[in-house]
Every structure is written in C-alpha cells, then in structure tokens.
Length: 227
Image (tube, rainbow, N blue to C red; front, side):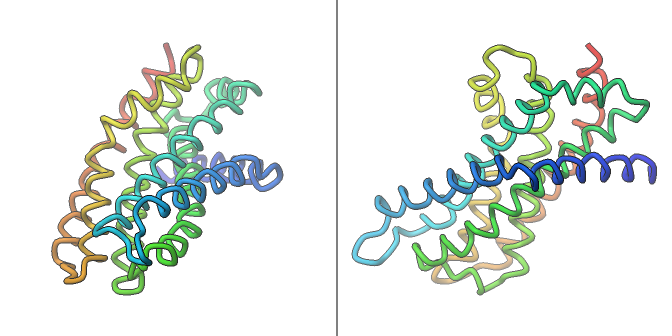
C-alpha cells in the first residue's frame, strides 16, 4: 500500500510540475470559473442582495464546470503525448496510476476553489467565515467525489472521438449526489439561520460517497484500461 501511495504521489507531482511550467490548465480553468460566477452574479443579485441559496448553488456549479474542463484538458494532454500509454506500460500498479491522476485533478480543483470562495463571498455576500472548517471539509469531500468519478470516466473516454461531448453526459448524472450534497451542506452554512448539524450530515453523506466511488474506481480502473 505504501508503494502504491508513493507511486501515486510521484505521478501527481509529475502532473503538477508540468502544469506549473505551462500553466495552461490552471489559467484556463480559473478564467472559466471566474467567468461563470460573474455571469451568474448579473442574474441573481438585485439591488446589492443575492437570491436565497444562490451563492451555494453558483459556487458548486462553477466547481463542477471547472472540474469538467480540467478533466478534459488533462487527459487530452495525456493523449497527445501518449503519456497515459507509457504509464500503463510501466511496471506500476494500475491503482497507483488512477490515484496519481486523481490527486492531480483534486489539487487543481482546490486551487480553483481558493479563488472561487472569496469571489462568491464578495459578489453574493456569502458568510464564508461562519464555519470555515466545515466549509473547507465540504469543498474537499465534494471535490474528491467529483474527481473520483471524473478521473475514471475521462480515462475511459480518452480515445473516444466524441469524448468532449460524452464526458459531461456520463459524468453529471453519476456525480449528482456529490453536487447536491455540497450545495445543500453549503446552503445550510450560508443560510440566515445556519444549521451546522444539517451541514455535518451532508458532509457525512459526501464522505460515504467518496469511499464508495473511490473503491469502485480502484476496482474497475485496471480491467477497463487493459481493454
């Protein structure tokens, strides 16, 4: 297990180094996420006040859209450079390859959220400091669940001709429970009368979702990528 985690970390570090040099994925994803929030702010803010629960919904919609873009761009780069084929031919466990790609995607999502959260707080007057630890836990758990499913599907579709169209079609229905859990948990924190117990319940549901889908992805990644 230690060898798998170490190999996964090396793969994730390779991806993050490549991204740190090119900054293509980070700039594209950040620009897209900021654009989404700004567009929604014109629709859901009236007279300086945001519609109830709009901040939580827009935050998670922006995370989902940005994550989809990051997944597509990451594996498109792997396809062009044949890096994924090299990783699969290397004498390492398939689970380490999956976990390495998953850690890299989660790292990009968390970086995007570092910008999204203050932006949503500024434009929608969202009380992000009311329960910061719980909000961070919700974002981390939701991002992990979304990326766990997305990494598997993006790897499966990397050689499909219509992968850009197919990825959102198969990704959003499966990750809907994670997005709903994130929205409801965040809305419980942002509400005028916050319900932190309800937010913790949604966080527990997200942790359960993560455990189930990371396990399923580790179990199915090797046979799927071997075909």
